[in-house]
Structures are given as structure tokens and as C-alpha cells.
Image (tube, rainbow, N blue to C red):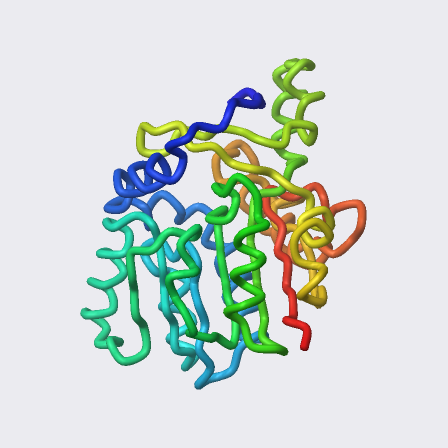
Length: 271
């Protein structure tokens, strides 16, 4: 897909909900190619949270992360604006008999204020849920209110520059598209037949602009700088495995932190 900017529509919230409602039934299969990345996130959650704590999963989708947290003994409230996604999670919770530890509600990220006086030991948000917001200012304010001092915020969002996307354009000799990678701050991706706008940040930029006032940065790294996307099928499996091993261990390096498809930002709520 060519990199380009688009104007942000007034009905963006509705578009996101409709888009993810449309793919809810097949979502788990669609994201299976990034299961390696999900494993890294779940290992991070295991380090960040303890059994008995309560975590808010923002943009929970079908509940892949929520159920992983529940398996660690963490109580979870999962919220998503797509009712079909939430229904998938509720079905999984019922099948696993986790009603006492996982709750799922239809709630858009922009509506976190409706949680009132509820407080959490942490918030997680994975696989670009936050990238669908016009900016992160409102979410950052809500997170500062919802998370106890000392609680954690583990965010997984789209990076503005992707090395593999850049290399793909270079390989196709599309110089005009290649030079735009990393420069465009908003992009559109077609999801469930709907054009969904995404805001793109670099990791340090997102922290400084939106979270530095209320949170301390504990960790930051990229995912997908070295390991190719699952759509790149011409590389030998052994090479992909080796690149994945390197990717997980070198995403902290300054030269790679802003080169992955995604970044992970781990923040601690200040007193």
C-alpha cells in the first residue's frame, strides 16, 4: 500500500467500530502471522503484572491478550468499540469459565471517562488500537486518572517508520513511496472494507508529547525491525527464525528503536 495522508473524517469512531465488527469472526486467524509478536507482549505482561492485580485492556478485540493475562491470575476488564469483537471475547470467557476474572464491555477508547471512579493496577493496549485515535492526549489523561500510582501502562502501537516497508518500496523501485516512509503522520488502512485512519508516532515522540507529565518511562523497544512481516514469504524459515531471535534482543538499540513495524512503550504512573 502506498504511503499517503488523508483528511480525518468526522465519523472516525463509527468507522472503526464498523470495520472491526466486519472482521471479528476471522480476526484471530488474520493476526496469526504475528503470533511471535504476541508472545513477546505476553512475556512482557508477565513481568509487569502480578496475580491478583486488575488490568484494563483497551481495544481488547477478541480477547487474545485479556485471556493471556487471566492465565497469569490477573483480573481483566476488556473494552472495545466493536460489539462483535466484545461478543467473541464474551464467548471465550464463557467457554473457559472465566466470568469471575474477565469482564468485557462495549466501550470506545474515547469513552473511558464512563468508567467513573474505577481504578486499575495497569492498562495494556495492543496491536494498533491506540493508533486509530486522532491523537493520544485524551487517552493519556484518562490513563493518568485510571491507573494507581506505581501502576503500569504497556502500549503497543504502530511505528511511523518501518524498515521492511521502506525496503519493499526500494525493491520495487518506487522511490516516491520510499522517501515518504517515516514522514507521513497519518495513514489509512482498509479494514473490513472500511477506510480506517491511523495516527503514527515514533516511540520517544509519543512519550514526550502525551505521557511524560504523569508517567515515567521504564522500557521502550521496537518489534518487527529485523524480523520480516508474515506477508514476506520468499525468505527461508531458518532465516526468519534467526531474524526474529535478533529482533527481540536488539529492539532497544537506538538505530532500531524507530525502525520496527510497532513499538512497545512501558510506563509507570508517577505519584
